[in-house]
Length: 385
Ligand SMILES: [Zn+2]
Image (cartoon, rainbow, N blue to C red):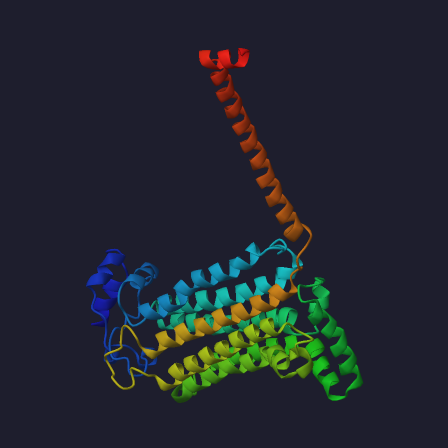
């Protein structure tokens, strides 16, 4: 059987021969390729590159895993680009957006790396390992991208003054100085300040590296607890990178109505709680292996836990993006003379111009009608009389 599979899967007759190849059961593939409670739908372990790409359109137990992280790339990009259409937003190349672009790259690496890892992992056992090493490596890019965005847009002290925008929410800007004074006078906040100023970004990078190494190790050892270890490794960077948000939520000065817009603050908090909710749900699916645990074999192709894990992680990223956008909006330049009075004057000017043109048209029409009436014989008599 392996000889037959290799001959077919080498692609001598083109990738379309793959459609006639049967998918394998878990007993027909190496044990390290199998997933718990997934009994069938496995691809041959020696597909060519083209066969792997074509398999995205064939129902296998990796098809859903691919699409649930590939399609979100376009959804995420759409919501990401919306920022550049905001009124008063600087050019996309402006330094204000550097952290935002880094966040975009981190998410892009994560989604693209994950979807390609699921698509290409049946080329060989070695390539399978490489695919998932790259997949785990993208976690570090996402973690550091998030941390940079949090540091510059959400952390109430670090980064914001360096960006150099006055911001719509000037009260929040004032609060920075207030916080600085209160921090310098208190003993414990100084340590928090030190952490954010000096240790936050390096800690995020270090944790990202540790998590990648740990995830890669789960493919060689700790295999029995690999899902739990990987999930914890996913959550650890969250606690480090979310420190600025925790501070904003827990610090009374930063959350008081005088220091930040209550509406903006509650919106940011809502997105963050939803972000946490989706993370918890995704962890639940990844560890519990529900629903396939209760019905092995019935969710081999569609609906197994890893697909729900992908969907929930993407929803958490989407809420995270919205949360960052709320904070960015507050930092953008506020209304200007041109964006308020300018638009109103321009509009009224257009209407005035339109009225003048309309009046001129009416006047012309009226004159022509009058001349016509004047041209009538009876009207001439009346005028002479
Ligand atoms: Zn995955």
